[in-house]
Structure formats: C-alpha cells, structure tokens
Length: 213
Image (cartoon, rainbow, N blue to C red):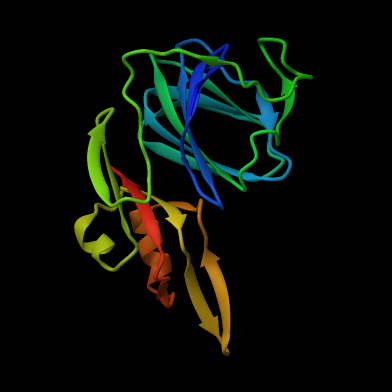
C-alpha cells in the first residue's frame, strides 16, 4: 500500500480484512489532524510512540504518553496534536471506509475536502506489518504479537498489554440465544478483557488477536 501524504505527516495501511482496517499515522511534532468525525464508523486509536493531546468538542486531554488507547464512537469529533517528535498511532476503523470523514475545522484548510489519496515516497522507515500470520516482532520499542485467541493469552501477557481483535469474536449464550459481545476492531487492556472474558463462553475458532506491549 502506498504511503499517503498528509500536511501533518503521513499514513499507510497496515492491515485490512472484510471487517476492519488498521492504518499507521506518523504525525510531526507541532502538527495536528483536523477536528473531524466519522459519521458511520467507530475508531480505535492506539498511541505506540510519542506524546499527544487529544481534542474533542468539549474538552482536551493533554500530555498523553505511549502506550495508550481510546475508542471513539461514530459521530464524535476528535483531533490529535503531536507534542513530541514522530508520533506513531494505530487507527483501527470498523467498518472499512476512508471516505467516511467530515472535518469541522482544519489548520490546513481541508474542511470541505474529501480524504486525500496523494502518495509519496518515504524511505528508510520501519513499517508496522500486521497480518493473519502468527508472529511476534519488535518495533518502535514495542512488542507486537499476532496469535490465536485462547486461554494462553492470560498466561503469557501482562495486565497492561493492549489487545486488538482482528478476526473472530467472543460470545455469551443466555437462555439458548447467542450474543456476540466482542467483534473485530474491539480494543482492551488485558486486565479489563480478563474480567469480561470470565463471564463469556469463549473465543470463536477463527479468532486472531494482536497484542502490543
């Protein structure tokens, strides 16, 4: 996938399936995204490296340091400002649609423009490569592990590890009705997911997750 030029840095597609896409954003110090929303999709932001401020319509959360994640519901206006050099963020979208974008205001004059697809050549950058292949590797000071969803997660991970569901789900049966509780694109810290999972019926057979430490 091409690297997409942005006035605040660049981004590229790291992973996509029929349910979700994961983009990697590199934001330059002192730059910021537009204040924007996604009318039809939910977004997860995982700060892998650096320090940021997150702005919303009614508040700002300042000096957020990696590792950190937040889930942003559809229609919620948000903006990311980089406070340190080369901020790296994973953006998880569900469903997949880069054109699901409305900008409220923008430092670079893009309020009434659609998503830009201008590609650039960026050399000598480490890329976060996410796939359905089971693998573990280190990048940007973090350990990325792709593995099947299983009880082994709770034995091999730390409470603050971040877990992203790539495929499959977690369900709960109540009076013979199956309820899908966790779906692709959902993000947790392991300690929170552990509390939820203890009351669920288990992972689906096709469940694949990404954990970040």
